[in-house]
Image (cartoon, rainbow, N blue to C red):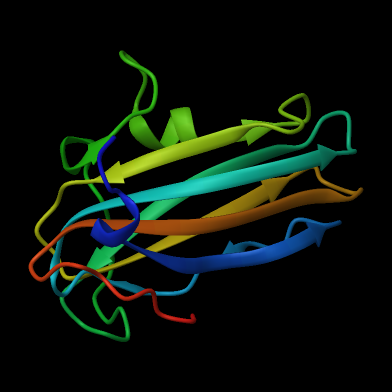
Amino acid sequence: MRDLTNNIQLKRVISPVSVADDTAQVGQIIDRLGYDALTYIINLGSIADADATFVTLLEESDASDMTGAAAVADADMISQTSGTAPETAASFQYDSDNQVRKLGYIGNKRYTRLTITPANNASAALMSASAVLGHPHIAPVTQATS
């Protein structure tokens, strides 16, 4: 067996939330300093609305406050589904109950931010998101509390 625990850093992006409207869920800004790999994990619970859709957007910037942020080009992301645009594969809808999505970032910007925007959502949709930072410059990695 190989050790993954001491070679990754986990960061909270979107705390577990029940979304009952079309308010965009804007994630925490993730700083890649000291890591060469980044994957976002989106955890889904029950999605109650029968016609709701949720669009995933990944932005990047050189500024810690995301000044000048731009949408990440598809070429700078890794899709969880071969042949499907990365953000499209990470997006979900009303019948995606209890699923997991992942979205990899391979761009060269230091800061990224994930946003999930619902449409036609009028009932509880349970979700959260985390970032997994890997390929650390210094290991073993001590897990941060946030």
